Image 1 (cartoon, rainbow, N blue to C red):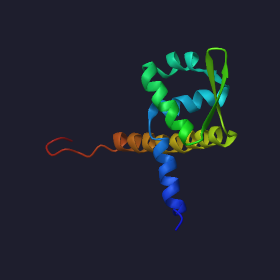
Image 2: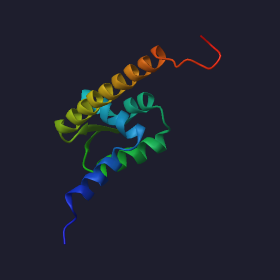
Image 3: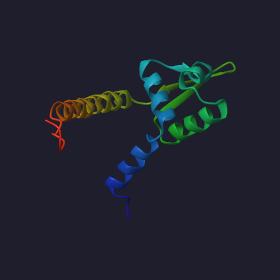
Length: 116
């Protein structure tokens, strides 16, 4: 029996569920990067970055190529960059809605007993 699509999607999104992995994918959305270039941008230890890159490789979201002693990473599909762009748009809408709600709440402060 095959795995249901919704379960595969959940596993996929679980793979994306780490800030360092998202940051790596954002950087790779711009262009291919060597590991040494990723380290200062992601801001984690080399061993941790290596683990996160391994997770992304296992999920087939990134691919590598070796040039001398450097290992370069790239996205396996432009759809990954598109997914990140769409997520940004969704979050922008959510945050905009929250900001408007906060502004409404601040504008309509309830009267407190004993105060005019």
